[in-house]
Image 1 (spheres, rainbow, N blue to C red):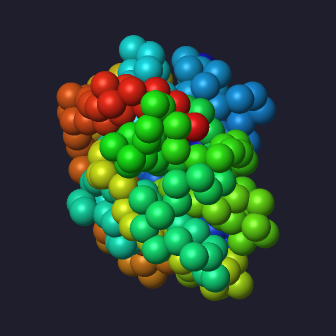
Image 2 (cartoon, one colour; image 1 turned 180 degrees about the vertical axis):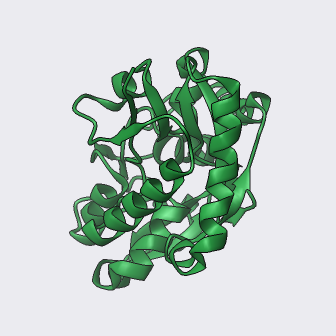
Amino acid sequence: MTWIAALPMYNVTPALDFEWRAWLVEVLRRVKPACRIVEPDEELHGFWRRPNLLLSQTCGYPLMHGLHEQVRLIATPCFDAPGCEEAHYASVLVTRADAQFDTLAACRGARAAYNQDDSNSGMNVFRHAVAPLARAGMFFSTVLRTGSHLGSLRAIADDRADVAAVDCVTFAFVNDVMPELARRVRAIGMTAASPGLPLIASGTVPPATIEALREALNETLEVRPDRAKRLRLQGFSVLPLTDYERIGQLENEARAAGYARLA
């Protein structure tokens, strides 16, 4: 079997994509199975379920909606970013720099943007934040699906939307490497926190290889602290799957409040 690996989640710019790929090369060099770094040639739900997947990163929402039955958790990165606490993260509630909104409550009747229907950081925690404010399941005038956190930020900056929830790690990277875009938006709050985006492997990967991967993750931070700083990586935590039940809890709380979808 030819093992494959990819890190598709935090490649905000080509330069960051290069940094993540270089780090992944270093990790894989320390693990015995030969592995090829690939660009996913299919939608990510299919890619994450490949039986020869040695290492990738997923979102907690699809993880808890069936993916956990086919993968092993390797570790969860701990990022140095506002909104992160160890392996947990929140999303930043963002509006335009010159918008009149200073709180989420003030956004009643505004235009919302979100990245994907199966995103914890862009949809699920956003829904949870809005739920107590909604009336008869409604809060916004329109809701725009953008396809990515960058797409949501650009929609706000270009006045096609007024508010979005953006993964705080992505938002930190945007402030680092896309200052022009960062200047056109501003934060007005934070969502509830939940476990961060986990690194995963196929359920076919042997336990000994999972342990080797965990050791390699931390070794790469020690030997290249400069790269770790650029990637905002502080370390890794091995969380049990039960910690990710927090994501379902947030979903259930929104549904119980009568707010099953962004609207």
